Length: 78
View 1 (cartoon, rainbow, N blue to C red):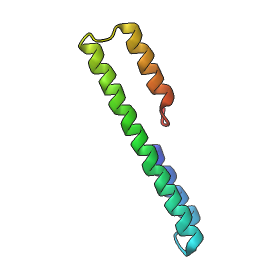
View 2 (cartoon, helix red, strand yellow):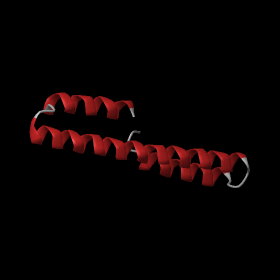
View 3 (cartoon, rainbow, N blue to C red):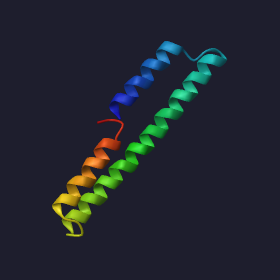
């Protein structure tokens, strides 16, 4: 998430906020950042759920590792 914020700030400085093109680019960048942040939040909730299932004994060690690996591969910010 920190990397995403830095990228957004850099793009904002490079494109500027004046004019229709700058505003359009800024809106697109911020929209993409919000969508990416929401996706990462969803993956964190999935990871927490998998950890809870493992602690409660609903899944075994092998299933836990498989699910955790899948979540890590789906993440944008590894």
